[in-house]
Image (cartoon, rainbow, N blue to C red; front, side):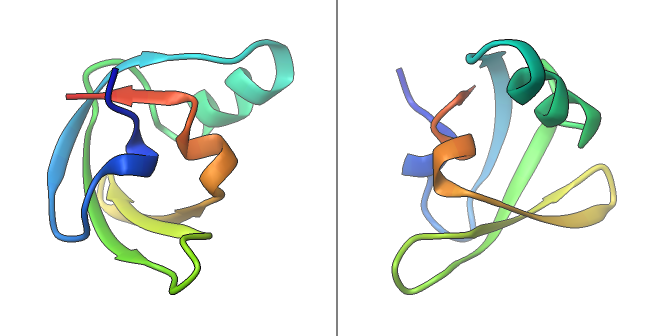
Length: 73
């Protein structure tokens, strides 16, 4: 299983599945990260947290712990 946390900077991936439960999963979905959405990893902070991605035409920064819940291909 490959997660968003493991994607290198400059790569484009597609969301396969969201893991997690309840409010956390709902918050991720509310940000536009749903199954089939393409994500472009713009930057990763020096210590790996946060990760800046481009999704649906806007830029978004997410925590490393949230990125672990997003399975990509």
